[in-house]
Length: 97
Image 1 (tube, one colour):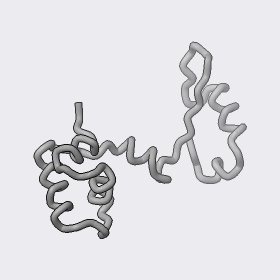
Image 2 (cartoon, one colour):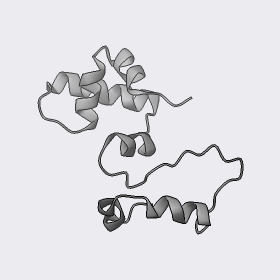
Image 3 (cartoon, helix red, strand yellow):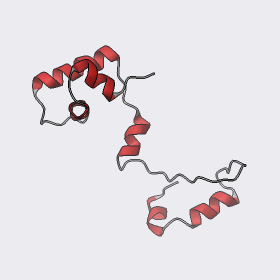
Image 4 (cartoon, one colour):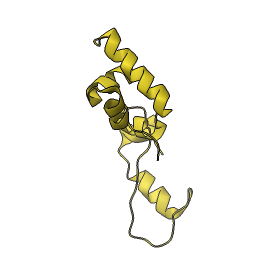
C-alpha cells in the first residue's frame, strides 16, 4: 500500500497539516519542519495520488452518475445522452463529461 500524508507525518514527527503545507509549497513553515517532511517523503518513496488531488481541488471536470441499472451504460448510449441532457447549462458549457 502506498504511503499517505499521515505516514509521512508520523515518520517526520510533524502534523498532517505541516505535511500538507510542504506538499502544497506554502511558505508559512519552518525550514527545519520542511526538511523533516522532505526526508520522510524520500524515505517512504511517497508519490502523490493524482486522482485524490483532483477530487479535492476544482481541477476535476467530471460528474459521476450512479445508476441502479445492471447494464453498464457506454458513452453515446441513450441512457448517457439523457443524463447529459439533464445537466445544467453551466456544466454543458464547461464541457463536463
